[in-house]
Image (cartoon, rainbow, N blue to C red; front, side, top):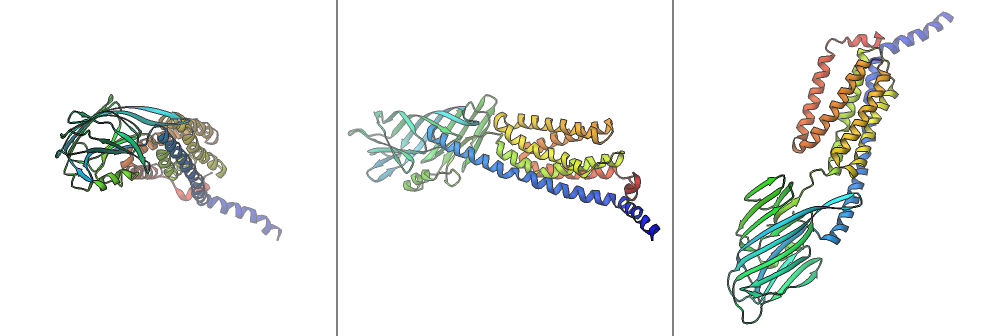
Length: 410
């Protein structure tokens, strides 16, 4: 009995050695899932910060002006609308970033020149609508000056001017100044509408039912020209009612430009968190491969701490990007975590060469993730190719490994 009892620890230890590889793979899989779940907890925080920004944006819109949409001008003879046969709008928009707290939004100041022809004479009143306040600096109908009054109906600015008695004509001219946040759009109300815009903003986003006929984008700004025909067949009541909708997407016929901020920090941070499982799995897999080819014995807790650094990276990325922008935040957070893992791997891998190689792999993964995030439409393809390349490299590096002997090798 005593001799049999003394053999049990040896038998148990032998079984543990033979099952070491299986246990390591199970531990790594479990740790990857746990760390991915921890990283996913950053997503609600990203949404909360994004909602906070939208709250600030609404407050800024109340002060500086909402995203602008203009419909008109239109002539009226009593209740009968006199449509415009043609309308040309020339606009110059100067854009600046306005800050409130840690947030910045593109605010534009526009100078607009409206020139058009009514289809017939007889208009006794001119009208136009907009989502944000306008300053009509000068207006005339057939050289007769018009004085517009402003009213607000359901949050929409309505401008009306009476045509002086005794004046008749069709040529309409307006000089308008406008301010707004994020976007400028026009709802065409003429048989033929032409819009020409120039701006010092070099990253425009064109939207709506009609894209520019021509455009030119330079580092110093952009210019674009739209030409739209055949829109005036709609009822004027429907056209004006369309301005009351508070989204360009739901407004048929509208077109314009948004002053696109390429680095939407919350959107791109959310996308980076969605790649957490890929990033964590590749990092732990690289650490595991270095353990196989070295004399190191890495404990599951050490794997967990290395992966936890990646989770904290996403928190740093979110916090820093609100102050520095995404590019600088990514550089600082990625560099800090790379240095942290480099120093840590130098202690647990017991080889400076392996630690340097592991550091280069981590730096490469951060660089690769940044490239994937910038690709946007091609992100899925890039991520899939990354997984395939990682698998191919792992298969190549371990093609001569005797996996049956791994558990007993050390």
